[in-house]
Length: 92
Image: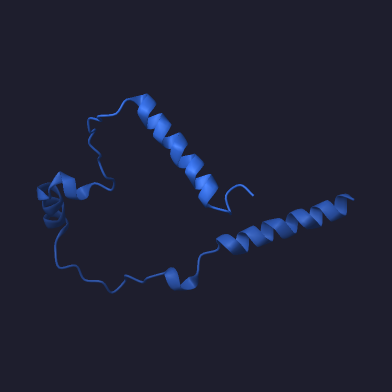
């Protein structure tokens, strides 16, 4: 029984290794690359760039709601119930 488990574990690890292996086409060789700017020019450009353009996320502003929590909850419950009756594929 232990041999079967060992073989199964090795098979799982090999499969996982193959699944996560990087494709050879992803490598890009930059050995012959010639930059058009110096390091100090690039750093100066980064400092001059607006902060908003460097963000990798979206900031949302809070908007005042005209509805109470109870009204929103009632709407959500009503929408869920209407989806259940209209969609034959929901929940079986």
